[in-house]
Length: 295
Image (cartoon, rainbow, N blue to C red):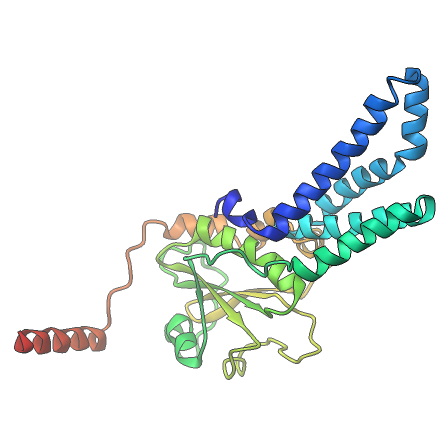
């Protein structure tokens, strides 16, 4: 998904315009107007004393960028905290201006709703019922089969990356762009990507260790299945390793390494599409015969 498609929404556009206008206006005020009246030393002093909000915003920008899991999440969290910082600063030093910004931000909060997810990724298939779950994952499982950790290649393996999420939770929606990125980059005929909204899909959790209770805070839960058998999952059993700590920060490279996306894609990139099973072929033949008779 292109950068324009991801951020082509009134929520992002108007918030960005406000931040640009705010910073530009005050830089103009401090660095142009005051420079024409005072010495350069005075300008620097006034900027440090009156414009400390800019330094705070800059520090916040760096911190939030390092903590963010996606561009959408970074932009949203940064602008929200920046608004709170601006209001707090002006309510203390300039009450009328503080009230003006408070009113403006309240209007933006009421009428600018953050989009849950911009655009659908064509390479992520949503699973909506038990039948789809069976056709996507369980049909590859052999009775009593276990994952073979000694396998060094994924070439002959049918694999599925499944994202379990809640559409009403911020972290689930913020990270969806990350899984879409992986799907666009790594999906093959034998390595497919799926999503499950646990608020809408029931009956597929009996043999999967996914806590779907309303109070559960384990979403998104991510799993990779190999030939119908669970191979890897996150949250993982040992989150205290170096890689586990990187996963907690939702770092893209950490997930690529943890789930071995590169290897899975490389081993299966030349795989052919699955052949239709006999029942599907028979059904197609029946439809062809019926269409010929009608003609």
